[in-house]
Amino acid sequence: MANILNIETSTTNCSVALSVDGKRTVLKEDNSLNYSHAERLHVYIDSVLSSAGVKRSDLNAVAVSKGPGSYTGLRIGVSAAKGLCFALGIPLVSVPTLEVLAHKAKPKSGYIVPMLDARRMEVYSAVFDQTYKSIETTSAKILDENSYSTLLQKHAVFFIGNGVEKTKAIINHPNAHFDSQLPSAEQMCHLSYRKFKKQEFEDVAYFEPFYLKDFIVIPS
Image (cartoon, rainbow, N blue to C red; front, side, top):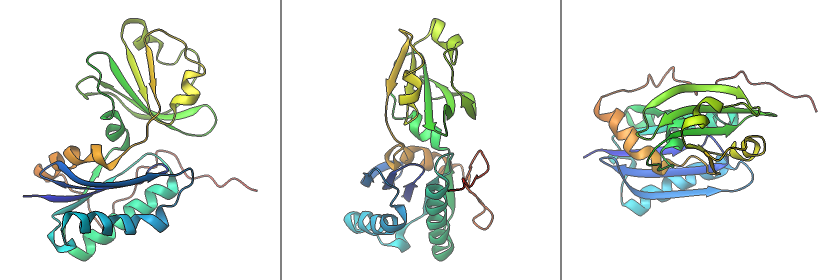
């Protein structure tokens, strides 16, 4: 039996789930308008474990959503996950954030485009088919009216994420479907268990979030 603690902090949604053999048992999350992960994350971890009746020493691995996303949110989530792995001597599993987000969509056909808001008209996005097979890997894209036109010509395309608002303002196509969602630790559970079974672990000492772009400080 594999108890895995799943941590998702790539957006404003502070999300923690405990899974047993890939099935979510307890989930605690809160999507406020502000980033409050520093204050809430460890409280949520303790709450999830307590609700499940599981001690930290009972954990077999910790999984973290690795990015892209908020620089601060990713740093907090990865730091917490690495700290637990170091202290408990258990493996670290990382799951791509856009893959987690894609699994919130349940289309019967067509393509899924998970997208997270970046600056201006830019999004972090990827493309998956309806079976969640990767068609296009994670990248930063500048949106315009021709974005994803090739897919939209012949297929339904399900855009999901907090990058949807800027996308639907410029893409007007009958095959385009929009769903404003945020990544959640709930969708991490079966993904992290799959990697756990394959022993696809990260080096706890050297693992860093997948920021995709360099952090830029904007002068006030």
